[in-house]
Length: 275
Image 1 (cartoon, rainbow, N blue to C red):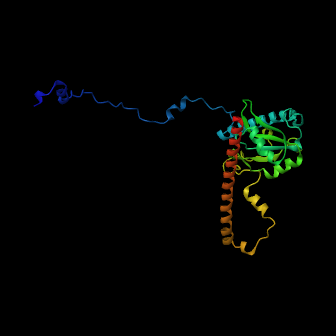
Image 2: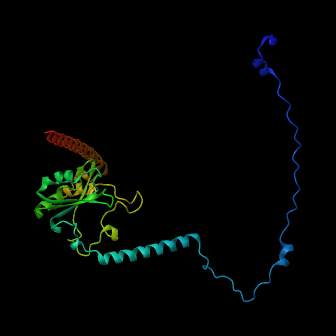
Image 3: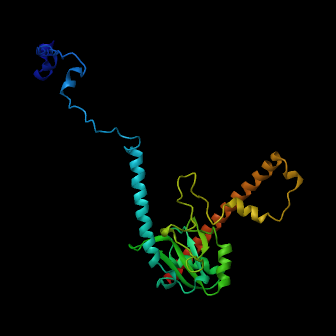
């Protein structure tokens, strides 16, 4: 039956050519392994005046790394000392008018504009000046200075606006310390109060605002005396669980309210521009 098949199909049934013969690999014999005793006579005679190295004269890899880090740290300290002699916050042309009326706002979203920041903080009083700090490329650095017309308005914003949510991020509010606190040093000179870049995740601060939420809750309930039913650990745990749930529910409610307010303001701005 195969004779009726075409040539292209007959080639599929042809036998393969025989495998080419290759001679086996010959393993070379290596010389036997011996010691270095027969080469000792070729060494140079030892120097009688040569003293053995003392312990600790050779640096380890970790010691070399520590030495480089120390030299780099000393160089940075010298640069900071030179810059500190020139730094004068009272003669800064970009600063606001009065330091005691100026508010420092940090951890701002990069999407937030000066107009949005001014509109959020106008609830506490009339604002004289708003300055959003930018880098050399014109991009925001995440903090700003707001100068109020009255000092009492600045203090009100300092107490109430800490932890306020703007564009999805909770900001940190503090006073301007460069012109109001003696011997104050900013972060770039080794000072500052921030704790978000101390070290690892177990050391860095992750909560919003100046103080942790637990201490704020403790300050609100400081006037309440400890009741007898709070002394039992089991009852204390049962009482704290609903509080945490209520606190989370209040935070979610505040977030939804802020989102609705932002959308309403954006809609009003859009209508105003259309007119």
